[in-house]
Image 1 (cartoon, helix red, strand yellow):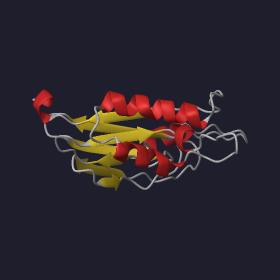
Image 2: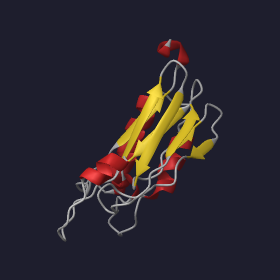
Image 3: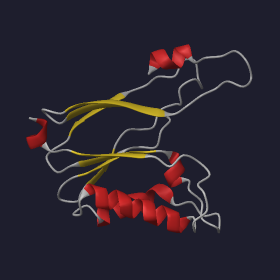
Length: 154
């Protein structure tokens, strides 16, 4: 991440920057190592329904020349779900200009943690479209959802 940040520095006033998460998942062990650059904090929901917010956010790539980035490491256990999402979800505004918020996202994922993951994601898509009352989204709405299955990883 630090190398990307170094490469994306620009001396003009319209410096481009971007947010991202980069991670590696060792599928045989469930060990995850990831780094955030100004991206919303991912979260993990365990099989028993407990939630853990991960990371501290960090600085966007290209914004500050000497920004420091920290790796976070954790282990996914069978049945755990990891969610990484764009701010297009948390900042998705309804007609009254209220954001959907990360709390509603987490609430939805917790309420549906016993459902198959595809059903959970379809439900979120429907909920976001209802939130927007069918209006097009103003920003990218993206989410990566991973459910760890050690049996399939072996």
